[in-house]
Every structure is written in structure tokens, then in C-alpha cells.
Amino acid sequence: MRVVPLLSPLLALLMIPPAVAEPVPTGPPNVPSQTPAFEGQTRAPQLDDGVELDTQTIADNLEHPWGLAFLPGGDMLVTERPGRLRRITPEGEVSEPIEGVPEVDARGQGGLLDVSLGPDFDTQRWVYLSYAEPRDGDQNATAVARGRLTEDGTRLTDVATIFRQQPAWDSTKHFGSRLVWGTDNTLWITVGERSLVEPRQLAQTLDNTIGKVVRINADGSIPDDNPFTQRDDALDEIWSHGHRNIQGAARHPETHALWTIEHGPKGGDELNRPEPGLNYGWPVITYGEDYSGAAIGEGLTRKDGMEQPVYYWDPVIAPGDMTFYTGELFDGWHNSILIASLKPGGIVRLTLDDGRVTGEARYLEALGRVRDVDQGPDGALWLLTDKSDGALIRALPQE
Image (cartoon, rainbow, N blue to C red; front, side, top):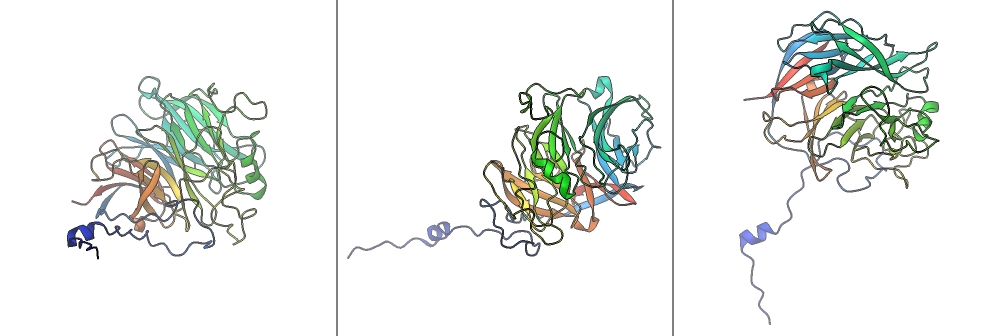
């Protein structure tokens, strides 16, 4: 008889597979029958980092603030959806509305939306604004304009519209509207599919900019290396298609790839890494269901030729903007994705490994609807709450 040596207690312990942490407690999915396409695509293990956040309200009584951009020196430009652009100091001094902002259609989800400084702001002082632009009758669509901010910060001059979504639609929803700069000074713009059943089908065709990510140069011209510039049946400005309503976008600090987060239906919010020319499926494939409880289309979650999200949520987090954290104030957060959440609210943090989500955590849900989250020059988090009396809030880790 062969004698099998016994394992030492320590070695036996090391050979036991580590326990996998439970996901963030969110309740059951809206569509339990839907399953992820790969392991870790949803309900990643909950991160237990022990971090608690302290918040300080810097400015309040802002009417549905939406976008935030840091000026050299630390002041901020903040948009309010009714059509106001303000300059706010780190101490909370709020300017009068900056003059020269284009006319906006502020019904429903529309209005003045994102704001971004041009890559050459130090010399040219270009400020870029996305907004719901009124068109004929009750129609509207996403547009992007730029103007030069005067030295005293009170007015935009030389204002010109450099992008207009086509076609316009009679809808007050799903404008998308985040602005992200590439390392080559091209501008990615996210545009929604206007929510209604008829226009959402256009997200799958290339003769329009409904439900797309588009890419333009800083002056509105089209980059020669866009994916569809050699096709007669497609618009040159399209970067990717098959999107629902992308309201968060950021460039990875190391790979420089574009990452986006979009509102799904009832369940099915998506984190994507849009690549040139690819189709991200909406409304043919999606996780979740319609708000009525009916299936979207044929109820498919995958199909050949259509990309899967890197990650999805069911139930939703109703995402606002996102950013990659690169500061030093939050231990262990380097290159984490931080996402503003409208429902249940607060901030969602994701960790990544080789392009896949490895963990998720939630913070500050008591704040309610957070529309924007940005990293300030000091490494602190700066948040905008989307309310009629919204606020600019600074968040730091507790001592």
C-alpha cells in the first residue's frame, strides 16, 4: 500500500480557492432570464476598501448643473441646463451668467449640457459647449458650438456651431452630449437616439448621427482617418454606432482609448470602449427591458457583428458622466473608473484589469442625483448634483 503524505495545515489552506466577494447588494435583475456573455460582465465583486468620503458644498442654488471644466488656476466653468454658463471659484464665488452662449431648447432633458476647454485654451481660449439646439417647429437635436472666453471671463466671442446632429426630431429626451478630446486634438462627441421608437432604429444606419459617437477636428472638419470616410453610404463624422444615450465618456490615462457609459432601458446600462466602425447593438441587442416590461425588439442580448458591453448593470445606476482617477488622495484608486449615478445616486467606482471590470463599490448615495464627477487639480473629487437647487460639491477621503 502506497502511503500518501498528509499536507501541512498551512499548505492545505493555501490550496483552498479564495472566496469570491458578493456583488454590491442591488436586488434582483429586471430580466432574470438574461445571462452575461462572459464571466464578470455584470455584478462584479464588491470592493471593500474601507474608504468613507467627506463632502463640502462649495456652491448651491444651481439650476440643474450638467457639465464642469477646470480653468487654469483652479476656477471652474459650470453649465446649467436652462442655458447658463457660470464661472465658479474654488471658494464658491459664483459669477453672473457668461454672455454669448447659444440659444438652447431646455425642455425635458434638453438644454445647455457639457462644457470642455479646447486643447489650445492657453493661447486661443476656445471653450466648447454641447446643447440641445432648437430647430424648425418643436424639433431639436444635439449641437456643439465653440467660442473664445474673454480674458475677464464674462463673455464668449467668435461663437460658431461646429457640429449639428442630423436629423432633428420632435423629442425632449436622449441628447447624449459628452465631449472628450483625443491625444491628437480630435473631439469625440456622444449623441443620443432621441428615445422614441421610430428614431431609435436610426442608431443602426450610417446616413445619420442618431445614436452615435462622432469624431471631428477642433474646427468642425472631419479627420481623414475616421472609419467611414471611404464609404458613400455613411457619414464621415461617425466613429461608432448602435448606441442608446451616452452621457458619460472619458479617455483612459494610459491607453488613451475612449471609454463610454450609456443609459440602457429598464436594466442594461452599459460600459463600453467604442472602437472605430463598430456596432454596439442598440436597439437590436440590449440587456434589460422596455419601461413597460416588454422586450426590446426580439429580446436579444447578443448577435453576430454586434459588440458586447465591457460591463452592464441590471438594475441600473442611471449613469451621468465618468472619469478615470489619477490622483494620490484616494489610496488604491489609481486608474479606477468613477461614475456619477442618478439612481440610486452618488458615485460608482470600478476597478479594471486588462480591460475587464474586477470590482465595484458605491459611495455617497445619500447625495441623490449626481450628474458629473471630475478630478480636480488637487486630486479631490468635484461633483454636480442634478436638481432644481443643485450644488457643486467637493469630496475627500475621511482622515
